[in-house]
Amino acid sequence: MFLDLLKKAEAHYQKCLPFVLYRKPEETKVLGIFQNNNQLHTTAKYEDSGFVFAPFDSHGTTVLIPPDEQIIAEYITPREKTKSFKWDGSNASEKSKHLERISEALKQINTGRIKKVVLSRKVEVAVSADPLAIFQEILSLYPRAFCYLWFHPAVGVWSGASPETFLNISNGRLTTMSLAGTKRVNENDLPEWGSKEIEEQGMVTSYILNVLGTLISGIKASNVVSVKAGNLWHLKSIISGNMKNISLEAVIEALHPTPAVCGLPLLEAQRFVSEHESYDREYYSGFLGELNMGGNMSTQLFVNLRCLKVQDELVNLYIGGGITKDSIPENEWLETHDKMEIMGRALFNSQD
View (cartoon, helix red, strand yellow):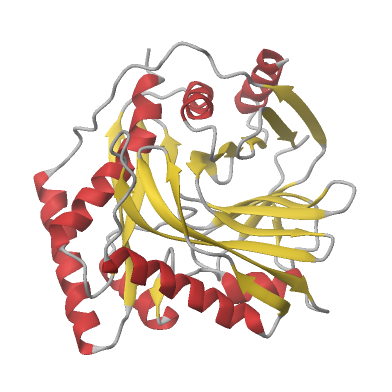
């Protein structure tokens, strides 16, 4: 039962033992993986089996929770609706700083040094939070997302609802996703996409096809479609192909970080992010998920977006947006504001 799974997770948390709870998109099963000691396991070649948690920095350490014990429970979303929520956490000083970063990014784009850069920000909320209560809210609010709660005493508590697949590999078949462009959901209206969003999503698609083209045979991208994630619309293409005689390590090295979380050209965008973002992203915009698991040793990884970190009496929420030549700074700020509502809703609903 689901309550038994929560009790198991609570006991592990109190004993400072690593665990992860997660539900895949459009499913009702919640899976729990529990480690029987507090050792820090890492993986570099991605040949191990377990649940991985990788940072934004591709040179950072990828942590692995081995499947010492696995539990599966059914979660049925409660019928009652969660109360309405409107994020009111805007800060004039933070807004000014973020607009300055966007303006500087546009200057670099206009010189031709950068085509796109993803700028993010972290919002600190002083609140005492129950990670398991937050996770249950996330499960209820976002059935189409990859929902998770991760804990390792050496890493901390993270939770989120990612709309973006990073990588699926099963029976030699590889699938990934090009997700970019953002519009707020207006009830009963389909999104009207402008040139900025269409071009941004096209950049990501072209980049993935290019970097995987020499590694994957028969690679192709689907038509672009509009998909809903929480209160937002995005543009998405599915990219797939067949694995050649190539390692998973080589594929991940080629793919991470994608332009959807960093920018183009990659090195210039990374440099700009490092110089202008005022914090360490840690595991935000990294990736996480099952590594070499199940009977066919499949891998299913997701980009760590729409996430938060619980830290003592403080919760950090993370959001970002892609800046291109057509970006309007005020609109980009509003986009991060809209994205903030996704985790903000789960956080504040869990306080009751």
